[in-house]
Length: 404
Length: 114
Image (cartoon, rainbow over all chains, first blue to last red; front, side):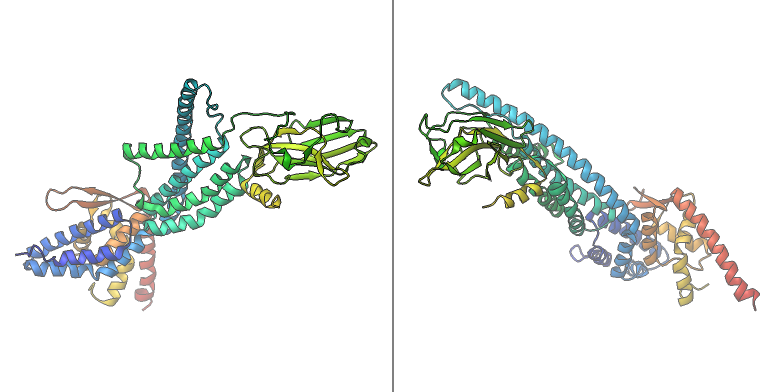
């Protein structure tokens, strides 16, 4: 009679096989089940030949040989090069398909959530007429980068699970392989190849894309697959909230340009003193922001109007990113400076304002020193908008280059 | 042929995939049945070691020569049935031809050459 607590020889044998297999759990279960059926058949046949139950079991197991050696042979038979190649192809397809699905869902949820928030804020605003304006436009590029973060994480996780199942290898091992092979490619794409109009939020999002990819690779089965409708919905809502927040953070509420009046609280005292009305140099000026916004050019004539002023400079200052009037509170120095040149009696200078990381709204000001060495604003400030177009790597390089 | 001798064991090891593919043929068999068929068809002269049978089956399946399906059994546990794929049929034909050539060559040396 079998002891209900003590495991049988067959159970011990199969446990040793299972411990040595080191294959995906589903595959291991099937192999052990197949061997268990084989042992049961062999026992029955041997018992029919006259062996006792115990003898039949021992003989059936003896014919299978050493359990560890059997497990090693089966594992080697499972892990073929053909399956590895197939796993690579299937993982690539899974990454693209699942990543795109999450990207699409995240973006749609972002869109819907943003509209809902906007409607809610508008309703609140209509009840409070003196309140600040509601949310403006969504920071599309920043939000899009976070959508990619979501896609990279779930795409990588699915790719690893699929590759492990196809290659018949442990998920943790495949996760390390996919992370090692895929992360440089994903990082290269996110940081150097992909180019768009970027702001800091988009750059942070792009920097997080390879991080999310690696996290997805290493998460493996520890993260429960969102296959249950409730879990899927919960994951989608969390993603949407993150994205909506990301979209709202960088949302400009209004846009201004031209020559606004300078008031005392706009931060121009950091640029230079204001000349009293009527004491400005007499000149004809032309201020041109080129249509593509790449370069602002300024000309003043006659140059002789600036006699008595020295160390003239054309300075570009970072403006309020939200579009509010004035110099950005944390701007203590111009981000670009040019020295005007006297060309046939016309003072000319140009500045490059495009491609500056973190600059979306700028002010351009002509300044000079008077006889006492005090710097004054000599021409009305000119403001405009610009965008950074390039890769995240370009953005970071520009940031380093513009560091004081 | 005594399958327990080292020489027979080595021969058997190399021919296990051919024997497995041959006994499955156009049918559908599970592991234990395959080992029994080999034993029967060889007149009990030899049977593949049951320890080498399953690695061989799994390798043939991984290579696409066999396809496997779980089937419930009227008695006992469910079983994993193997059948030849098109690739398996091609491999069987190729292996048979190679085996025939091999036997002919060995005979030329060991029998005709005496």
